[in-house]
Image (tube, rainbow, N blue to C red):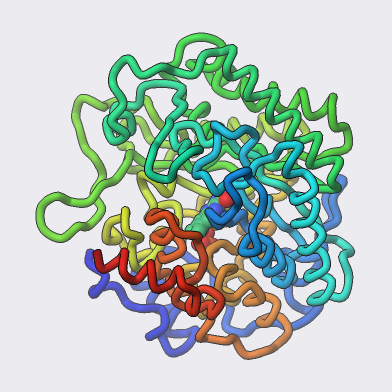
Length: 482
Ligand SMILES: Cc1cc2nc3c(=O)[nH]c(=O)nc-3n(C[C@H](O)[C@H](O)[C@H](O)COP(=O)(O)O)c2cc1C
């Protein structure tokens, strides 16, 4: 499939045409004709479950900006982004952005860090967010704010955006080759893992002291927590059996419960995955799955069908959600895949970032895949609070789909990712009855990923004047031409 043959969402003139287009693709995406307003909107109603009362069904996903200072503190760009998270009107702020629990675990030299010297800055981010949130919604009632804690594992680049410094749990036959790692590249030892677990404890205690309502123990997108779940071939306490592969999570949770009682815990999970994709070396650079008969059955994924690793398998993710329930974790954010090796699965887009490939499917198929997985999990776990992901590509019809998905019980919360960079208030405006500002609707140009891949801060360069008019925009233009 090439970009030219994909029907542009902006070219579909009304909801009926969008609905027929979805149907023609043979996928199911619920979509309402009319947007309900104010308290009539399913998106605006508050939700009480267990210890939580959350003021509406709108969530903001964690969105990092590659724009912190070298010591891991926020910059003015970061502060502005968190203000805009608040301005969205969403009552569930899922993590803000990835915050590394130690320097060597940072995904880039500009990632935020949870450390004593950044403490007051992490407090400030929360405060500015709340202030803006009150300006939009009138009050902070029912607002739940988390901090996403992470170690980037295989994708650590703490010291220079040009230098990978991977910390890996096992040898992955495709990903180790892509990173150029020799066969004797060191694996994280069990005692190094124990010390990373202690970092998570320290960071969670800090988040609690700062007034964050929960921490997200990140298990997605190929980073360390997610890599544990696929560590089938690792030996020892942290690999092999399901019990061993979830020991990292259980030990982090046990420590947080004893050191920061009262702090809630959430988990962002790549609930399914596929074998890594790459550009087709022949012809157009469309994404194709790396196929290799030596890799069957496939033992290096989580939520992947071993016999056809291009397909999801939710059996283990279901077991994982049962474990979360047993551990008293009720907040779960469902995402998929990884931005590094199957971006079309993780964030459906029509235009690839600089390190991506042309979409191998209509991006709406990717949206439907994530929505369907969340629906299946929601059915099995009615008591969990699930956040759905992958809605940005719906563009002008995001509000129609979001309303239907929440009303029909496909998800508890609709999470906003890329669109929050260009148009944070999209669902707030829609449910106020205001016309959408179409010029702010994200069209998935992927500059928010291309910019950081080229060493620049992330942001919406095409649509947000703050970035459009910045010196970085000029640099990005030149780098893209190069
Ligand atoms: C620029 C950028 C930054 C992101 N930062 C994070 C992050 O810090 N933590 C995380 O879990 N996901 C992160 N993501 C993934 C998004 O939260 C989300 O899963 C993805 O964009 C798909 O949702 P969407 O279709 O609404 O964009 C990021 C994505 C982008 C494009």
